[in-house]
Amino acid sequence: MKRICLPLKNKFHKLIGLPLADILKFLAAAGFIIWLMYRGTEKTGYNWQWYRVFRYVCSFDDGRFVIGPLLDGLIVTVRITVYSLVAMFFFGLLSALFRLSDSFLAKILARGYIELIRNTPLLVQLFFIYFVISPVLDIGRFTSAVLALSLFEGAYASEIFRAGIVSIHKSQWEAAYSQGFTGFQTCRFIIFPQAVRRILPPLTGQSISLLKDSALVSTIAIYDLTMQGQAIISETYLTFEIWFVLAGIYLVLAMVISMGVQRLEKRFKVET
View (cartoon, rainbow, N blue to C red):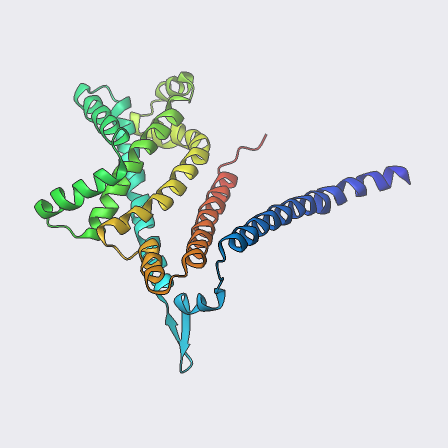
């Protein structure tokens, strides 16, 4: 009887015990934050008006669904993030391959790009591309924002890609070449499938960083989520309510990215 109960007890702790403990910890942390907010607003005399917030997310006009400014800004933020993510992967992988190549010129170009981008502020790069480069190339503010974000985050992603590739043991390259694989086939079928498992976790952090950095595009008058929030605050003085809503939306977006990468990690997981 004892032998039967012990596995059941372990399963109970595994299925119920640990999630319950996590839920209790989350509730305790949330309760502490709410208490801090209550005490802070009590001291400052701030009057919370959460009932006024929903209309800025969405509303119903004669039974018709109307997108509010916050939801409108969210769509712009998601578009900028998706386009920048794709371009970030391109710039990051290309510069990583340049650094690993035998070409002296390619190495110099990649090293110059990485050092220049990593050692200057993103805000300065954004202004430079928008006010100096965009009139020459005749590109709009949306494209300028995507270009600035992807170049900035791509420099960091480049080192992540390079670290993942060089972490694969030299014998893997030698074994592939001994089988008659070309350089491209070796990368495609041998190196990248192994490196991607090591690249995904740090690349997730970089993707979330890109999402949060996208708030800076409001400085060139792009009405993204942050810009819409600032406009609402200037009209309504709902300072804390709007900022907390913005923080919650960014948190949900970051969690969506994390869950997507977790699914990829499971897909590329090696069975041991």
